[in-house]
Length: 272
Length: 158
Image (tube, rainbow over all chains, first blue to last red; front, side):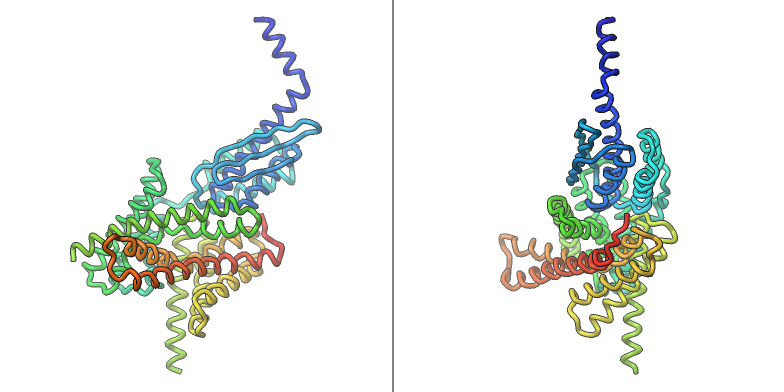
């Protein structure tokens, strides 16, 4: 037993191993910053910059950063020692306030330096404490956005009210399903069906002349506008792999949404 | 004169609902209260420019490109103190121009055409293809219009 202890002590004293441990902690902290940025809807170039600034601010040199759709890899160095680490990325959402706060953290670390513990602590705090709008307000605002979209597409007054209701209920349903960990594409189909049905049936009951458009407008909350523009940004900035992956995900999302709308319109026609 | 008043009403209508849609999606994207007001302004501006372009008989894609370009440029210059947030606000303002309804129309049309007992498939395929192409080109116009000003200014912010 004491032989093992001696061996560990000897390892701790090894400057190469110590450096490896430091670099690993720096790499992991920088990767966590990158993951937060990706999950908040940042482009690849912003994510790369956030990872690079954090790692450099913590004292490591950068050999390379690879940002993928579902993971980020980072190789950092110190003198002759290098280490490569990877982190998985969760669902790509949009969270503007957290995005900006994490960027500010990376910029602060790049400018003033810091410790791995302080970066991890600050990041945890930001993820935990960055304000979010109340869920009822998000649902209502999303429904309002769908209804406004509907007006831009030419739906009439009665359909506006139906789309508002459909979009609001659809967003609340989406949030509940996300919390339960349901697959996002399945969520898209289910929400499109429910929101579209409410929009369509509501418009019909209210005597609207734009029932079909109300069905579509109520499900427009599912159009992934930010990922779609991010896909173009990534391709334009020299990251076609992630850009293509985003575009495929957008296409798949819309195929599932259209399936839900198709079912909703089928029921509407059957009930006519 | 009457035409001008009617045109102004249409522009105001589109600007109002464009601003409302941008602010609504801004809440979904978790913009802060002050930024939400700017999102609404950006959405109203974008839709006003696009509507004026359409009134001038530009194509939807052309009008959307100019509207996105103008919105991004105004945000870049007028909101330079906000740094990277200015670009995010311009993007939120352009979200009401994302032609999701075209994509839905195209996909629903393709579903109909691919049915085994499809009737008049030849006639149905053209509107579906047209809607799909309009979606792709309009989305491309928004992306290009948003990207060009920040790349030219070399101030993409962080």
